[in-house]
Every structure is written in structure tokens, then in C-alpha cells.
Length: 300
Length: 320
Image 1 (cartoon, each protein chain N blue to C red):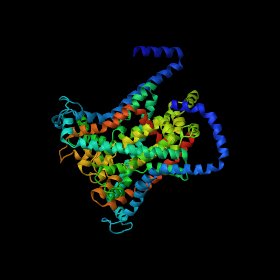
Image 2: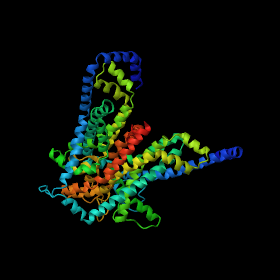
Image 3: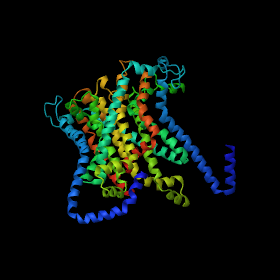
Image 4: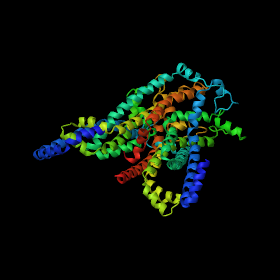
């Protein structure tokens, strides 16, 4: 600290205005770090507290006199053991994994085909359709869950996780198509002209040129589809009611609570494991994740 | 990507010539090719059209029909469900609470997003990634699960916040059982969840403001506030508008937080449209009444959507 202060003072004495500028900048930096730490505390309190609770013993969770913010009596994995052996958690996890994988696959096939067609080939009404896709993305799930209840019931998929595979694409396909249109349009026209001349069909053009070149966009769209169907809550809450068909979000929140006894340690352990897959993907593919987030408003 | 370009480009000039020769000799066949091309394009869009038509447009229209039936769905009652809702005090409380919930939450999300985006943008480039990664965590955790975590933080007997309050000699707060504190709590959780989204959008927008503008302003002697007021805000106006409107839709239609933390209580004072529609339609089994409740969201959402579309198009033109 002392050398920096001396350097700043020296610069200030020697260069006048410039020194005060760099001093200002240093204070601005210190203030930035200070407030960022405050915001970081606010943002990270719930995950921190969830972790702390999950590693406590039942006795410590129930004991009200000890400081709840720290693990005082030693960390234990009991809650996780209890969760994986005594509850339906693994069934929820399996159901969610099946639903999410199916939805991501369906979403990618449907939206890549549609985006290729809308971004490059054009047909009568294609620009209206592109606008319609964007508007569909803005329709929230809470507007449609009651009519969809009737539809899911009519096709016999009420209380079955295959019903989720049917309805989740309405949440993922519009946005994925929208960002893929942007990515495809950014590919130079010369590339597909060259392919056409060399005798490539439309399908070859898509698989040999567009998909490889737009890979970052495809990864971003896949991450979006994955996180949306992993976190979906309204539809399973309305359409699923028995434990063997339940998915993670609703299962953790409703089924793990038995009678009036809240096993908070186990609940938090469940919430942590359930939140882990999106967090792991985020940790490793942060740039793609953020590209997908901002693409909606910045057009690819 | 580099590979693809490399293999295609050397052949380009010669093939262009071939193409020119081909098109002149087969000008009549071109029309047919175009027609076939558009047919293929339409077929590629067909799965998407089917999904949107069957699972979005049809349910939306069906919802209007459904909302005009009686509870057993045997009789057409016109606007009976709507006028029933309008005559109920609880419904007007839902309208009021939805408006308070969405407006307050979006305002603070936008404010916190703007502040944190500026703070991160102030840092040296090397550290920005780390902070951005850390502050986006609330957005990445599935909302239902983080709401559960918040519920536990607000738990009536074991609240960890009350532990802190008590250690400072303050009285305990009944976070979720006092109606007003319950309203505060659900809004707080929504701000916590949504602010990182604003942060990311604003940070991306801040990066796109040309550095020369700030340099020119600095030479003219502008201070930090003037730079913000006359350069940053005008340059970001469009993205701020899009983000705010988008968040308004999502927040207004939010379900997870209220359903998990209070399920509408105490005394129905935290209900928003989505949870009230769920209570009437699914829990009480009156689907038509629930459908009518959700439909009240539609006009507000439609207006916001139209403005977003305008903003996105304008921005698309600006970027080019």
C-alpha cells in the first residue's frame, strides 16, 4: 500500500492533473470493489445458506440457539444419504433427465431446420412467421397452462412425464429458432453459393456448412433449451401429481415435505443436487450461456 | 470454421463462371427450381408451425372459449366468469398485488442491474469475467429451488435473518406470516433472481458504446455524471427499454416464487394472476374460471410485446 501511495504522490507532484486523475481512478476502483462485494453478498446468501444447511445434522438444524450461518458441530453427509436412500429423489432425477434430453433433442431438430429455412431460403409468409415466432417466445407459460391441461388430458398424458416432453418445446423452440436465425444470417452468402455450385443439396448445405459454422450458436441454443426444461415448474405443477412421474423442481418442493415435518437439511441437499447440472454447465460454458442470454435483444 | 472456409474459397471464381453460364442457358428451368426451393423451405418449417399452431395458438383460442363455460363445462355462460371475477374483492386485490409486484420488482432489478454493470465495467478487464460469473449465479439456479432456499431463510421459527436481527437487539420479523412483510419478501426474491439478467444485458450494451465518445467528452471536460447522462444513457436507451419490457412480462406472469413461498397467503394478499389462476383452475377444479383469470393478463402482456417487437426491430436496423 505504501509504495503505491508514494508512487501516486510522486506522480501527482510531478504531473499535476494527471496524478489527480489516477488518484481519482484508484478511489473509483476501491469504491467499485466495495459495492461489488456488498452485491455479491446479497446474491450469494441463499446458495451459501443452502450449502451450510445441507451439511448439518438434523439436531443442529433444529437447535435454535446456535448460529445458523455456520456449521458448528461438524459437517456430515447424512442428509445426502437420507435423500438418496429414503426418498423418491432418484426417481425425480431420472424423470427430469429423460424429459430434458428428449426436449433438447426435439428443440434442436425443429429449430435448426426452421431457422435454416427462415434465415436463408425464404418462402411466402416467412417474414411474418419469423415475427410470429418472436411473439410466441413472449407468451408466458402461466397464460396457457389451463387450456393445455385440457389438451394434455385429451391426449391421455395427464400425470405422465411424457406430457412434459409434449408441452416443454413451446417454451424452448421459439427462442432457439430466433437466435439460430440470427446466427445463420451472419454466415456469408458466398459460402452457400459455392456449395450450391459444387452440387450440394439443401440438406448437405445445412449439415456440412451451416451447422459446423454456427456451432457456437447451436451450443448456446442447446444450453438455453436444457436450462429451461430443467427448471420448468408451472407445467409439472399443474399436470403431474404422482411421485413416480414427478420431476425434480416440483418433486423437491412438494413431495419431500411429508406431513408437517420439514426436513430442512434433506430439502436443501435435494435442492443443491437438483440445481447442480445447470450450475456445472454454466461453470464450464459461461460464454455460450451469456451469448444465448443476450442474443434475444441483440439479434444474434 | 476456418477449415470450411479454406476448402471452399479456392474453387469460388471458376464455379461462379459456371453458374453464370448455367443460369443463362436454363433460364426457364429456374422458375421451377425456385418453386421447389420454397416448398423445401416450407417443409423444413412445418414441425415448428405445427408446434406453434397446436400448442400455442390453439390453446390460446381454446382458452377464450373455455373461459365462457360453467364450472362443469356443460353450459355456455358468456362473460359470466369475467363478471363474477370483477365483482370479487379478492380479484381486485390480485390485480393490485400483481401490479405492485411487477412494477417494484422490475424497477429495482433495472436499478441494481445498471449499478452492478457499471461497477463491473469500471474494473480492470482481467477481473471482470470473475465478477460477472459470480453475480450471475442467482439467474442460473432453477427458480423453484432457490425459492425453496429463500423460504428456509424466512422460516418462521428458524429464520436465519431473525437470528441476525436478534443479535443486534432487534425484534423478530414474521417474514411470511405478516401480509406486508410477505409481499416484501416475494418481491425481494424476485429482485434477487432477476437483477443478474439486467446486469448481463447492460454489461453487453456498455461494451458496445464506442470508447471515442467518452474520450471526446473527457477532452470537453465532462464529469462522470455528464458522461453517463449524455453518452451512456442515450446509447443504451433501446436495450434498456427492451430489457425492462421483457422483464415486465416475465415478472407479471411469475408463478414459482409466490406459489412456493406463500401459496398466495396470508389472507390472499400475495396472490398474483398466475397463482390465483392456479388456485381456481387446478386446485379448485374450476378450469373455466381459472382460464378467465389468466386471460386478464393478456392485454397487458400484448401491449408490452408490441413495444418490445418495435424496439428489437429498431435495434436490428441500428446494428445492421
